[in-house]
Amino acid sequence: MIQMLRRLFLTLLFLSASTPATFALDEQATSESPIDILGTVADHDNLQTPFGSIPLPRIFYWENGAGESQLDIYKSSASAIASGLFEDIDHVVSPVSGHIIVDLSITSHLFFFWLSLISVLLVTLYVRSLYIGGTGRISEPKGVIQNLFEVFFVFIRDEVAKPNIDDRKYARYVPYLFTVFMTIAFMNVFGLLPWSATATADITVTAALAICTFVITQFSGTKNHWGHVFWFPGVPFGVKILMIPVEIIGLFTKPFALAIRLFANMMSGKIMIIAILGLIFIFNDMFGSTAAYGISVFSVILTAVLYILKLFVSLLQAYIFTLLSAVFIGMAAESEEDDEEHYYAEHTA
Image (tube, rainbow, N blue to C red):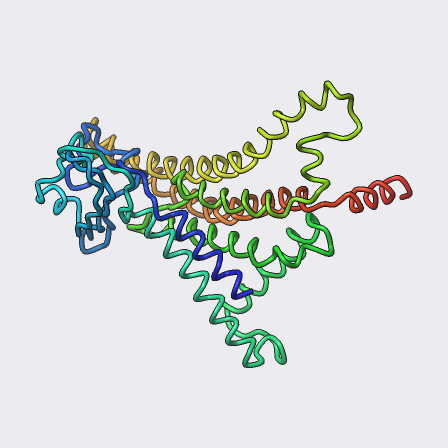
């Protein structure tokens, strides 16, 4: 289990290394409205803390005007611009001449993505040490962390993996499904904390997770699975030819749906909370401080209720992503013998 967690951690680290080439420069961003909703949920080049912002490194693999590729690392966006090789164009760091090939910069969303992965790894190693010592194996589990870990692990194993993946195969996928569930849950919960960012509200993050499920699904595909993709059985030849492109497209629409579903739900929840809380600033700008104090009672109470709801949604979205991953893997890993067993069970019940 630890080995598979380590491999998944390294895989996600690699997939998440490439970040979007453009995002707002926070120290220079401007907005005419009293609250910039989209700017708040966007990816940033710094971390917000109670003591001010901390700039994050900018890492560019780019091609200069002479046609030469080079890798440059700067401690912040300001440092990159101060070097003279880059400039601020509409609040985006761009080369003065040439173009960026890959932007490997550390951003706020990427930081919390990595923080979630590290948190899952540390919690797993901690609980593993307890089990090796006998706690939870010889005696009952102790502490909140171990009890929650065991509850979530048993739930993913018995309620997600086992019902959707063949009984002879499900155990090998439990570590992956559990890691995905815990990582998404950590990212979603971190997004509720003050001065933090919701990493799952970034399409590149959810896409990296969906790609992992896609790769595992395809490598888990049996002869029966690929037979249904490239030569659908039991239908006329002409229909088979029509079904091939449809089935191939279906292979890619599943991870696409995974990525969009998680991204859209977390992004919309974040925007809703910011918009409702932002009514205070909007009313203050439009009607004065008296109106702002009046609307603040409604905004704060509703925001508190939404935070409780969003905590539930955070775990729910982690569960849905994990469940759909298990369903897709189970469909691909199902063999012809499994189909016959299911058919016999359904028609003899």
